[in-house]
Length: 213
Ligand SMILES: [Zn+2]
Ligand SMILES: [Zn+2]
Ligand SMILES: [Zn+2]
Image: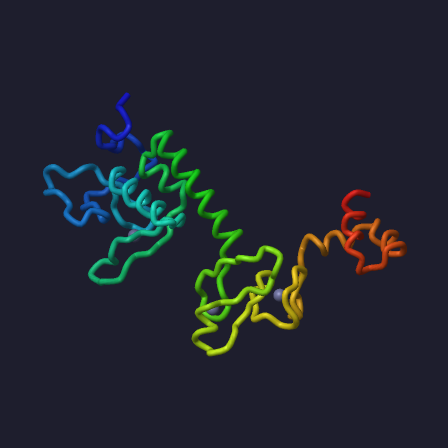
């Protein structure tokens, strides 16, 4: 057993699930001379890595808030980045992640993915990430588009199109097909018909009745 972080991670040369290549480490800007080179394995994109360089690169991505692992190496003979996305499964295997590294990676990835999903959406106008401040209002203003167009630009948090109709609203905008999947499901419940007779279709109590019937 080695102490994590103390000794350089290396591939097991007998591991037949990896493709070992005699190429310099594509993630290392200053790869060592041939003689003291670590054993490199090939990623799905064709670039060679060592466990150490791959762990370091992916960890730096997580620390910058990126949970998608993309190859930073340059395509052969060009100045274009490879940019191919590696799956976590691939990274885990080729970076020879230790148990504690795996725990760290998985926790960060889950947290970053959740944050992006819940609090940020892509503005349909400028494609940047926009944060929603008022959780009860589907109409969200994009400051970049508002600046650019010199008039207030709101988009719909639910259908991700330019906002249509009156605001604030929490159920939908006036764009066709803008629906709340959960409310729609409730509407199709059998009990709804009964409750609607008593409460009327617009009564906010209706949703409670449906949930608790
Ligand atoms: Zn690559
Ligand atoms: Zn925008
Ligand atoms: Zn909408």
